Length: 262
Image (tube, rainbow, N blue to C red; front, top):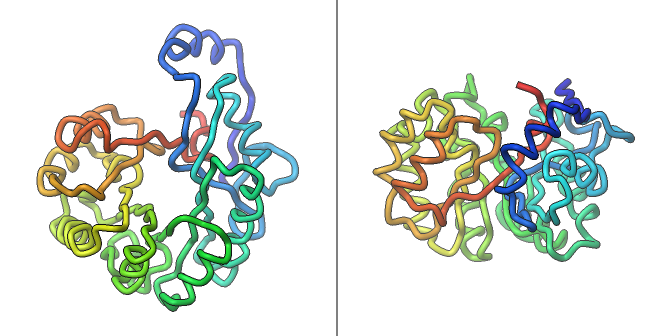
């Protein structure tokens, strides 16, 4: 289980006032965060009930946003073992954001989902895009899966036709420096200009040298964006701002990761 503490110590509060209070704006949009049901993922942020809905998110995020008005794009998630519960996870997102028109939600896909069924379900649930994940790929280990294995082109085509957002957590050991990843991202973005592709975790630049090597091959793509979620490497973010542009980088808390110490 991923369990995240929700305590807020005197040290935390002192650090916030010293380092962050003057930096955070009055309004925050969280472009990468999760809501979940406990029967779909084994996560917890110490809230009750263990399901994390809209109210639980707002309570948890207050610990790090400290009074700032917060809206978000919420991402559903299911483990590979629970892949038959994706619709349950997607419906949870839809239900939880229904009363806040300033928030958005996206739809978790499996690579074998019928593209037209995906279109119909996203419309039915009032969602705005797609979430894919490597654990749904058929090849093993999935951490070396190609993007097409868990984000098939026919589904990208539907996203283009609908004007949707796609949050992509690419894998492979060299992340955005991998030639196959570069080729697929550029081809998808150029072929389907009406969808917006977001490379999560600052292009998964947990080794920032990969960003410095790979990002120059992804310039000039108007529909390519990035979110900072779960990445604590400053150079990963700086490389996006300097090579791609500061207007393409969005903040993401990645709850529950945001509440894990260290």
